Each structure stands twice: as C-alpha cells, then as structure tokens.
Amino acid sequence: MSQAKSCVDIRRPEWLEQMECVLETLNEGVLIADDSARVLFINGVFEEMTGFARDEVVGKDMGQAYCCPEDFAAIEGLRQKALRAGRIRHELALLTKNGQRLPVVVSARTVGEGDGRQFAIVTVTDISEQKRAQEDLWAANVRLETRQREIERDLDLAARVQQSLAPQSLAWGGLRVETFYRPVLAIGGDFGLVSPFDERHLNLMVCDVSGHGVSSALIANRIYSETISQLHRAVPLDEVLRRLNRFVMQNLASPVFLFTLAAARIDRKGRHMVFAGAGHPPAMVVQPGEEPRLVDSRSMALGAVSDAVDEEATVELDLQRGDRVVLYTDGITDVPDSHGERLGIDGLREFVRQSALVPFSEMQRHLLDRVATWHAGPPIDDVSLVLVDVG
Image (cartoon, rainbow, N blue to C red; front, side, top):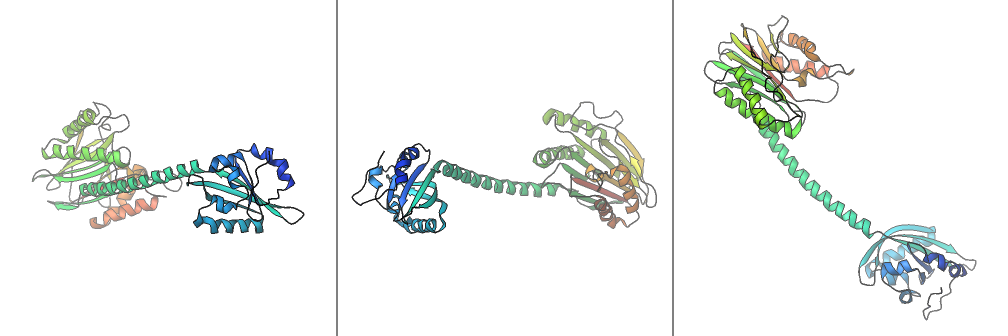
C-alpha cells in the first residue's frame, strides 16, 4: 500500500514500507514525518479526522498542512522539543479541511536511522467528545455556582428572619428573663418564645422540631406562628398542646418529623407557674444553693399520634423570690464528651446548680461555658435556652 509522492523527492524508510498495513489497522490517527517536518505517511483514520486526503498532504510541511498560522510557531517549538527529548505528549488543535479546529492529544516519538536521519512517529487521538463533555460540565458548574449563590442569599435572609423570631431578654413585673438561641446550621428547628399575653401572665416556651436545616426551620416557623395565635387568645396551656398537635397532624403531618416543647405561664408577681411539656426534657426550678427541682413533661412528642396530650397535661408550682426557672432543648443535654458520654439531664442539673450561685446576669454565660467545656467537638444540634429569675 504505497502512498503517493509529491514532486519533491521524499525518501521513505524501509521500515515504513513494511509497517503501512499495520498502521492502517490502528484506531488512532498516525502521521510520520521526516526531520524536515515533511509528511511521509498518514493512515486512513488520520484522513477521516482531518478531512485531508493523503495525496493532499504527503510531501508538505506538517505544520503548514494541519495548523492555523497563529499556531505554527507553537507547533514548531513542540517539534524541536520532540527532536531533543525523543518524545512528547501534548494537547492541541488540528486544522481540518473544512476550516474547523479539531481538539486532539498528540503523542510523538522520534526514531533515527544509521545515516543520521530522524523520523517523527505521531499518533493523534480525537478528544472532541471529551472537550464537549468538559464544556457541558463547565457550563453546568457555572449554573450550579450561580444557584448556590442564590441559595446562600436565601439562607442568609431566612437566618435573619428566624433570628428575628428568637425570644428577647426582658424584665417584666417581678421577673427577669435571659434567652439564648443557636442553630447548628444557618437555620434550625428550635425556637423559643417569651410573650406576655395580658397584664398578669408571662408565657415562656422552647420547642424542638426534629431534624435540621430548611425543612425543620419552615415547620418550626409555622408552629411558632400557630403558637403565638393560640397564646394571644389566652388559651390554657394544655389546650394549646392539643390544638398544636391537631394543627400539625391536619396540615403538616409527616412520618419523618415530630416536635417536643416545654411551656410555662408565670404570674406577674412570680409566685405561681403553670407548666406543660410534651416529650421534652424536664424544666428545672432552682434556688441558689439548693438542688434543682425537675418538672417533667406529662405528654408525648407532638405531631405523630392524635392522643399525644395527657388528660392532665399541666403541672402547677408555687414559686418564691430567688427561684430560677430553666427551659432548654436537648441540644444542650445531648452533647458528648471526648469519650462519647452524653451530658444528660443529671449532668445539666449539676451545671444548673453550680450556675445558680452566680448573679443572674452571669448565669447564662456560666451555664453555657460549663456545657462547652464538657462538649468535645463542633455543635451537633440546635440550642435554645430560656432562664427566668423570680424577684
């Protein structure tokens, strides 16, 4: 299978004559040139890739035949590098007969003969499909990055909105209230509430929606709105729990989430408290220097079963001057130490006892510092904390 020769005298090496049949069977394009960069041979695959018939290029300078003028200097540099190093591998674009640029990977190796002549054996792999895939991937990444920035802006706004709903510290009647809220992600499923509903009583609540992130935050905000609506109507706390449970099961029911809460209603003088809990860790009432009293939830977690609220869902307690009431979510009690042991109710109870010895204005920071000292690692859950000082 002898290829046509141009009018220029081209001496083909003997091994090329013997290898032509083999080179025609390869799945990659093959070009062989002499040390003057003149094309001696191209196989059929190379013809198909470039659109040039072998009769059009054999005897011509391979750079001038297959390269755009602006690429010629770079191609010549690669050829010189191949002559010096003996081999190269490079990605470039070949000029096709129809004027398009075909992305390829070129592997070239030089071989010499006894008379000092050198020949370049060049294999060419078409990577246009890979390039198109890379371009599609790049475009997809640009779209994803744009969408990610939009999501981050939305989350930032959602976090500010949710933070605006966090309870604020206040002094009301004979009561002082300190609050703390920290989501484990930008937004979370906890919320707290400090809300007078008339001139005589103050409502307090912490709520914990299962899960984290956007879905939990949306559900928490919806429950928050419904809770505010019920409390402003002066609905008794046990009935608040029943209505919340019914509302969630009718409007937001899902097998993958439920929520717990602890609510308290304290009179303006701070002498009487009504407490209602649903599947929530016990509230604590502590007098400085004494062991904290636990006030347990009587109802189950809400949002899963219709009869979750106990018939006697509330507990009534008498308070005295100096008492401190602690409501919290399990983002505090579930924190593990370096051995994986959870702080738990008993551990928090001891920290509350110790923290009740400091002035009330310092109690929140003292308590959170003790929890942080216990905890090994980054936050794992949302945290809400409400502290009340009875004056």
